[in-house]
Image (tube, rainbow, N blue to C red; front, side):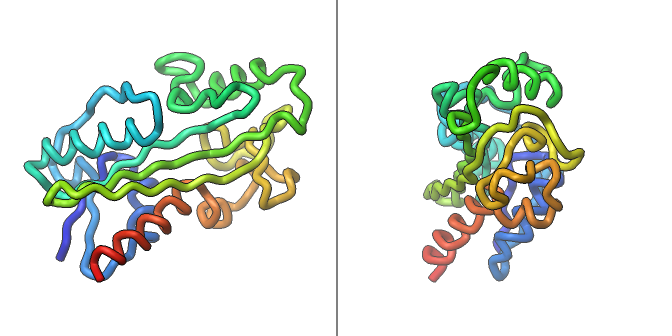
Length: 201
């Protein structure tokens, strides 16, 4: 059995990883489940840099265990790529989802629909016991709505209108299982699974 530590304590994230990375003989544990303390400063300027910071810190803290870390966020073209790596703290260090959404709407005030293009991005960094690194990225394209809709999801989901639904529904209105099938993290995980399966073979 190959054991991998997920550099997170997010139960929802862990379940999604377990469901998609169903590699035969692999098991996954969160930091808490593995008894590992790791909380590095995420001061990178890209999603890949921050994912690598988390992966390396957990790899060292666990004594060289295989680890998987991710970093994700919202990239808005009209904001020159913002909020980007600052997505979770766009309106401040301890900002709520509502505060972040309100700041995003204010930043895009007066910007017409065709220029509100955006994407959710997720980058995964996997570090094996021997230090070998595998990186995978997933995106989901869409536009930012002029107002929030839907009570589902979290973060910027109520403002994000994915291309897959013709910009008619937000991620806050799409059933969770449908959202998870096309999400940026799901796409990154499927890409990573292909890469890891190739290494195993």
